[in-house]
Image (tube, rainbow, N blue to C red):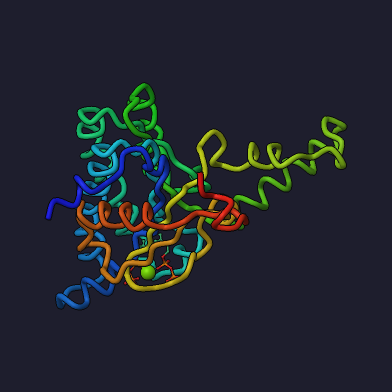
Length: 247
Ligand code: IPE
Ligand code: IPE
Ligand code: MG
């Protein structure tokens, strides 16, 4: 069955976010060290990006490294940073060819110097691409992002630029690192874990959640198609009753 043709173009999510999880367990299951799983996860990143762009999704956000991931063994953290630099350098050509713009959310200034530099280069080179925006969440955590927004608004209030009682939802949204990016309608997590792990807590308030029982290195285009089809079969009520939604 051709899954792709079952996707309803009129009900396409414009933003999909993915928690790419299970690299380590995938590697272990294949009798290899964890880093082997991270290396094999790069192909899945390519598959997800290409599939999303081909279907017409406008934003794809990938959770690549959390602030908590610094707590992993130094060897693994170093390997992940090296892989990030290598991938950024290798994939620029493909991003340009596919007309995909790269952006990043997270505390990217505190990434190792060469990662930060290559990331900014890739963001700059692809900035005029229009088909889809690929957002990498790097050194990201939702609590970090929310705390930063709170500090920003508190300072604006202290400086007399904003009246505390007048702070609106939009002021907060504009202080988040996802400023300008619509909230994801669909959040996918691979690896079988059913948790959010400090990802986009504010932005997923009404996202549909999809937990897949495969490890990230096994993720292929068909998994994205299937997740979109499942999403399209759900009723998104936003607090209303089912009857109210009938035309
Ligand atoms: C996801 O896979 C990649 C990162 C978090 C960087 P993991 O490395 O978390 O793999 P598991 O979940 O331990 O199998
Ligand atoms: C979430 O995966 C972070 C990323 C995918 C980058 P983790 O593997 O770090 O999450 P936990 O520790 O299982 O919650
Ligand atoms: Mg994990």
